[in-house]
Image (cartoon, rainbow, N blue to C red; front, side, top):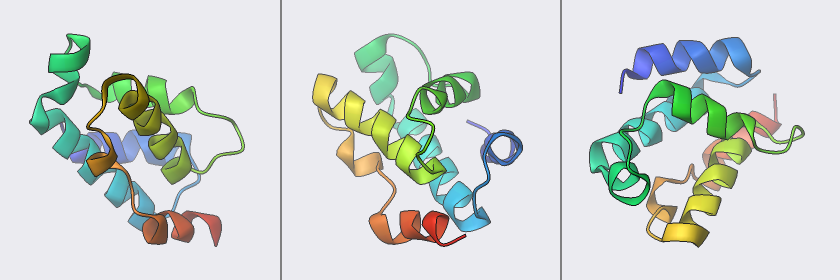
Amino acid sequence: MDRQALDEALADRYDADETVRRAVTRQARDLADSGQITEDLGYRLAIEHVLSNVDDAPDDHTLAERWNWWLGSLDISHGGYERFWVRPDVAEADRTE
């Protein structure tokens, strides 16, 4: 996964601090590299999948909360996704903007 392209897409779509975007893109790349999405859902994780799933989160959520909402759903349905969550202290930077 191209972290720079994902960062640009997230910057265009969400009002999120660079630190938060960096954390989300790092976690997205780690998730893609892990192959867990491929194993559980049958497709290779791409930027479009990240954007689509993050978009599904409640509108009042910050970017970090949206990411964690999606990963929480995956964790409930398949297990093993908690390790890809964005830490609360990083997510808090998104709330203070």
